[in-house]
Amino acid sequence: MEMPSPQIVRQQLTRAELVTIASHQFGDMVKAVVDIERGIMALGGELHSDEEALLLDDGSSQSNLWGINLYPSADEADWIEYDSMINVRPSQGNRTRGVADPELRERIRQIVNELVK
Image 1 (tube, rainbow, N blue to C red):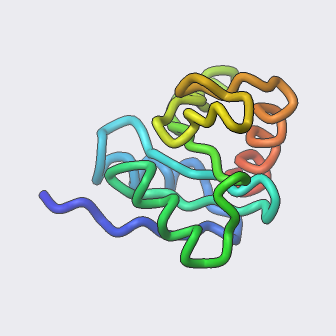
Image 2: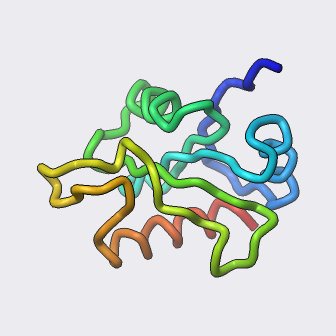
Image 3: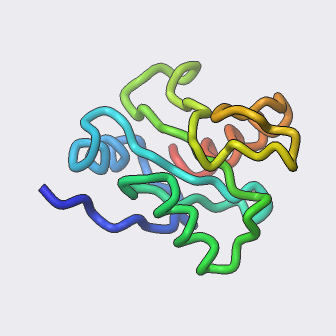
C-alpha cells in the first residue's frame, strides 16, 4: 500500500482524524514535524524528512523544525514521542534523536494540543 503524501496542518483536526491517518500508515502512529516558530506541523509522511522538506518548501526555517511521533489512541501523557533523526543537531545543543530541552518539548506539546483536539 502506498503512503499518502504528507500534509501541512494549519487548522485543528481531531484525534479521530489522526487515528484514520495512522491506520493508513503505521497502524497506531503518525510521524509529524512541528514548526515551533510558525505554530504549524506537517504529518503523514513516511519519514520525518519528507515532512521537514514540505515545511522548508513552505517557508519554515530548519532550526525551528522538530520531529515527533503521535500515538492518537494513547493517553494524554504518552501520546507524543519526541524521537526523530532530524532532531540530531549538535549545533543547537541537541545531540540525540530526542528533544533535550524541556521548554522546547513543552512548546511542541502546546502546538500539537492546539492543532489536535
